[in-house]
Image (cartoon, rainbow, N blue to C red; front, side):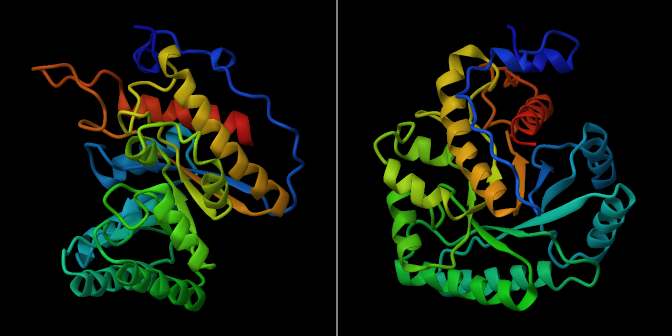
Length: 303
């Protein structure tokens, strides 16, 4: 197999030139444009110190981490590692309760703790917000709180397009966007490819509305039957890769024209997001190598 995985193991990497993407129009970035790549700790087997050292070595500017909760010792180790390796950071926050009132209470607790921690304010908060089975009004309470908290704290708060959560489908997200003008989004559009079993070509107007609210990207490539292709450099996934690049291109162009910061998390995941071989459950690609490949591809494209 000729994949990005073999590159990390000493084989051949698919050259950037072999990835057939549409030509980008030249957009001169306005002062203030900043492109930051974040590494994910999802699937990393090692200490926070080892993870931060590895991310820095690969050239990431920052990391996105789950807020560790009230364990002060864990917090201290995390912030020490971030400082030692000079990494910017954002936190992932969410709640899991099935009752909407309990869910909101836990959500607020985690958001407040992550932003108001005694060490350092995060660059942003990314939210796994609400539930797909909550009512519009129940989920809207989460948006209302985060809008107020972002204004009072100065920390941007984004809501992720994620299956099982508030923004689980494109038309659902459109309704929230049309009725909540201050809603800001983390785009993980790979989820919607699965939900709608398509590359969303029949929802262009809705997607355009969503892209206009995006401030943070999770750059995993999905396809109509799954949230993650096995290897984004493999030729059989060129249609899926190019569809995602076209969406991300529009976000980057807007950020350049406005002179705003853009953060991108490379978030290809471990098994069972990563396909595996039967019986052995051996991953068909190297998660870390794929994420580094995506960082290098997008840095070359958007810097």
